[in-house]
Length: 626
Image 1 (cartoon, rainbow, N blue to C red):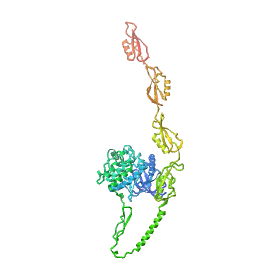
Image 2 (cartoon, rainbow, N blue to C red):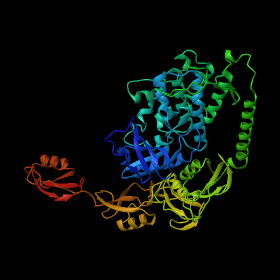
Image 3 (cartoon, helix red, strand yellow):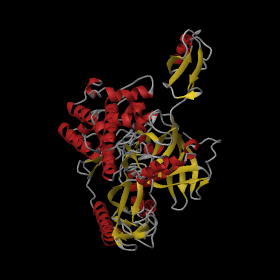
Image 4 (cartoon, rainbow, N blue to C red):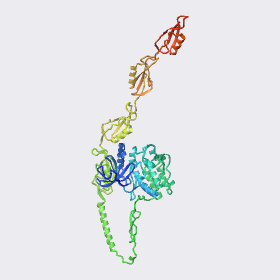
């Protein structure tokens, strides 16, 4: 796709270094531009993330982290990552510019590939994945759109780590999975979002299935439905969809796409080995299909005006043979004139000898440039421009070179080396002394990561009770946070077991003050609650909640129920009432009536009740009547 007049980035100098020339493509995540690195004077591809992603600080942090990891990956079948950064809200990634087409465009034009072509393409893809997995990098988004084919028949895999950087942003589905990759996603990515080398193997198996058949294994109305089919259904052998697929390639695909991850190939290298064995067994030594629009020039052609042009052909061993045109009819019987050919041969041999001598003595050598103090990506780019290759060596501590920058190189800068030689780069791990970070309150996993970033390691975990720090989180470290220690020193994490359990003491029949003292002695708090009690005198403890003998934890609050004495009720006034009516009234009020006739022969009415007023329920009330 060409640049549009409305694109604000075209003709702009991004980050003061990358001159944007034209927009090459636009996708759901980013736009890709053709640009020139004015500092190194080379063509590059710049992938600029869409604004919705650039506004998410979590995404920017993940993007920078994954880009740095991808930049460490150096392999001929991997699109190199040179740089990453942001400029005025534009988060970008600078990559090797690869001319040609995506594998998706090839499939769109061809429909499907032959088994030999499929093996040729997958040979590159699996070599790239094998190198990435060996370096601890997982692609997470293997699909035809991320496989590039150059006009000269090379294959390169792009976008390592970007799927992980985008995961969790607003451009993903509810399950955190990129919806555009549902056709290639592994079952474990759908189930729990986990991805590893075996997940890439699964996606590579689906890609190989598509190359052989022209279709993906599963289809449905929505990407989510497609994703769930990876959980419930087995990927069928390609031969069930397309005739002519050998059984050996069926085995490679079905093994790679097994739903149970442990039964797949362990990583890209293992799948590459299996594919190579199948290729050798079948004798499938094909070539990578040409990208759409590629015009291969046939040097062996004739024209109406003259004889055939000499044909250049491969002899199988890498040598080239030249088929000279046959003699014409007019040459027959003529005395051959050999001296011009002899002279020409002498001149050619002299030229070859001179050039060969220069090459052996001088031409095959160059001088390694110094790349000290540069990042690995910058150093690799500088070496690449000098015709050399970068290889990462062991990291080392340095008080003078920032972490992630080159401390030393082997051979050193200025050394005479063969063209195409590999220069080993040793990166700084930062200062040899570091400060212990404060990881209190963090979960153990998060604390471990923070310590690793500070060039420290966890020596062991000790446990301790804490009423202030939640169980499973760090209480403190030893050495303490803020102390300066040697890098790589072991740090002890003191992890909370939660509050210490204690038995609730029995404080029944104690005064409230005595109960509080007993509870505080075992580090429990007290809260008073006044209740009525017919059995416990007022001011004394009736019970506690939780009850005595049960388990509480240090710092917990225990409710102490203190007696207010019995609950009193009013005795109804029944004086002047007939005795039977008075008895009923007293009993219904919760008391016991005790009638006494003081004069016989009277009207049978109550003349006195004792006691009266407020009394304890169940009390006996004497009723005097005559």
